[in-house]
Image (cartoon, rainbow, N blue to C red; front, top):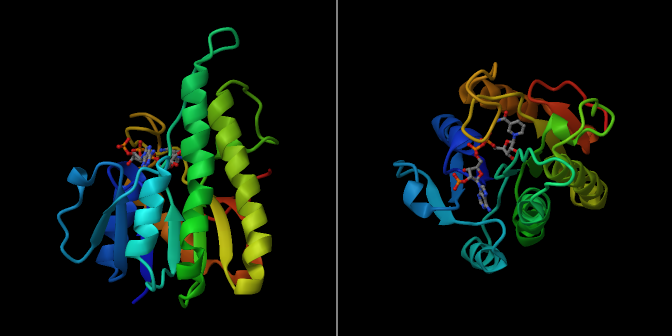
Length: 223
Ligand SMILES: NC(=O)c1ccc[n+]([C@@H]2O[C@H](COP(=O)([O-])OP(=O)(O)OC[C@H]3O[C@@H](n4cnc5c(N)ncnc54)[C@H](OP(=O)(O)O)[C@@H]3O)[C@@H](O)[C@H]2O)c1
């Protein structure tokens, strides 16, 4: 069975990804900002990873040396800040970019050899439609939008650079999901539904599609 590594399994979509892949029989490597929130599933392996802490990436890399990772799933993220021009919280803005943009790149940098050594060789970034510049008709959310647009730019370069190693990269918008950090209680999608659809999209994805930015159910999104 394939192996998936998922970041941000403390709550929300990451936790649901871990549950669903484990239920489907995959080997799950789940990472948590706070390891005490780990899932009570003895079939999974659990690791501490704050994606802004480079020392933890080094520890993870050495713990996983020689372990093939079929699907590297960068899910951990923060947002949406609501500050307006004149009252922006620049410290938080920097933290968003560090978490949502730099962290995923560091994840790939640390574990790309594990992905290259696997059978499926997939990297998926949980992005956001808010990162689409073409679709931005409502403004605001400077840090979050920039962080996800930057993530998309990184994913696209990774798709090109890692193509010769047979690695396929995709950026997925999970939809507006009713997680704590997500679209709020009135959001139309449950984590269960969104993750099920994203898993189907990932499973269908061909190598020729590398570099796509699409919704949970596979609809292309403008950059
Ligand atoms: N829900 C939506 O509607 C929606 C829409 C578009 C995109 N997304 C994206 O989907 C992804 C998952 O979000 P979610 O909706 O599941 O929200 P969530 O419930 O807040 O989950 C985010 C996860 O990321 C973790 N995290 C935050 N900072 C971290 C760090 N520095 N290092 C490691 N983990 C960290 C959180 O851990 P803590 O619990 O410790 O904070 C949490 O487990 C994010 O990338 C988000 O931008 C969500």
